[in-house]
Amino acid sequence: MSDAAPTVEGSEIALDADWNAAYIDGEWRRLEGRERIDVTNPSTGEVITQVPAASRDDVDEAFAAAKEAQVEWENTPLEERASVVRTVAKLLEEYEDEVREILAAEGGSAKSKQDIEWGGSVSFGYDAAQYAYRADGRHAQSQIPGKENIVERKPVGVVGVISPWNVPLKLSFRAVAPAIATGNSVVLKPAEDTSISGGLLLARLFEEAGLPDGVLNVVPGEGATAGDQAASHPDCDVMAFTGSTRAGRIVGKNVVDHFGFPALELGGNNPHVVLEDADLDAAVEAGTFGSFWNQGQVCISINRHIVHESVYDEYAERLAERAAELKVGNPVDDDDVVVGPIINESQRDQMMEYVEETVEAGGEVLTGGEADGLFVEPTVITNVTNDMAAACNEHFGPIVPVIPFSDDEEAVEIANDTEYGLAGSVHSGDLGRARDVSDQIDVGMMHVNDQPVNVEPHMPFGGMKESGIGRYNGEYIIDEFTEVKWTSVQREDRGYPF
Ligand code: NAD
Image (tube, rainbow, N blue to C red; front, side, top):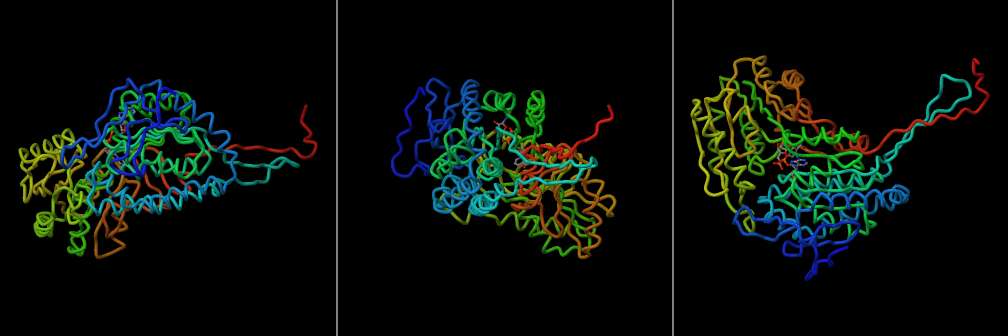
């Protein structure tokens, strides 16, 4: 090891702790001589700290440590494995204030976002701990007399995890916790903008929970180098990647190239369909939450509002009223803020470009439409068609394009007219009709009389089409992080034909 462990004043789990290191083989390594990545508070532009940008060699070291540690970890009694993950959930509860501060300062998370990201991570941790007990197999009869068939589930080995910046703690933990509970080791590469909440924080929590050295390794770094190396590494047995479809396509090819398994959770363009018999109050409230939670920076947030022409004007006006009253600002120390900052300039520029292009194409801004620094006004645009920029792209912002339709068939056609297939919602006073529409929308997750931002630890999370491959949570993620092995035992003379 080239470097000393970071010196930390007071609690190691705090925004102002020393985070300028990678965590490899149970050691905090400075990675001297590597480039540094600024961790910035998007509300103020203040640089909170720097973290090292791990090199390809650093990633290789992380995989070597993970591979070595995995064998013993796989053979560690189930309760010990479960207990480590459960302890991390308990520590998350214990460090609630510190974790919330990190989420607010590093990720620009408003209180409502912290509630779900922190709270969801706690409940998920308790659930995932039990996966240690649930990775079981089966026993089956055979066609052949005297033969016994046994199907076992074994951990895949080393799980690579690459996560995005938008819900960093939860999206890293949803892969790391099940992987560790089921006897795998992990190499985690968090997003550049959120190296603490998406990675180093988890390293500290698992370290405090007593996880053996090498079972979890965290390498902050750039996607094109550290991320690329992780996905391409021959010892990466499963790559649990969450991020854009653009990067996911590259990552998927790299993983498959060495016959690793790609678990890809990618982008979305999620429709919120409002039929003419919907309860408009409920549809508007759901639409407001589903569009503006975390500034719309969510893979499952509403990207398009698809509204029946007979209630179109009223819906759009009411949604614009709700949007205009949401408090925008710095969420650190202000629990009333609903819409915090956009994570960085390039994300903001991209979404503002989509708004501009949509207006040029004939869209009308009912409210919002401007940005002040990284704060983008909650924006509602009417007169939108599905081919306009804010509708056909994943805008990932506090932006509501409202598209009219005339019958259920057209609503389904518009909803499905996208390369993505992640999530969606439909509102109707007639649940049977809503189910019929829901059934025809090609996404992995549909929500009737709600909005698409839903996650539960035991429900399958994932998408169709270009939104990815595979499912997270419960038995679905256990399947992805374990490999099936068939063993047969011939207990009596088989009587071969020659
Ligand atoms: P991104 O693809 O730019 O980055 C995600 C991660 O991939 C980062 O850690 C990044 O460093 C890494 N990365 C980038 N290029 C890479 C490469 N060539 N090889 C390996 N790693 C690479 O995405 P983002 O901007 O951080 O996140 C936003 C996107 O993530 C949106 O498209 C959103 O829909 C998607 N997302 C999907 C889910 C889901 O569960 N389906 C959840 C959250 C976000």
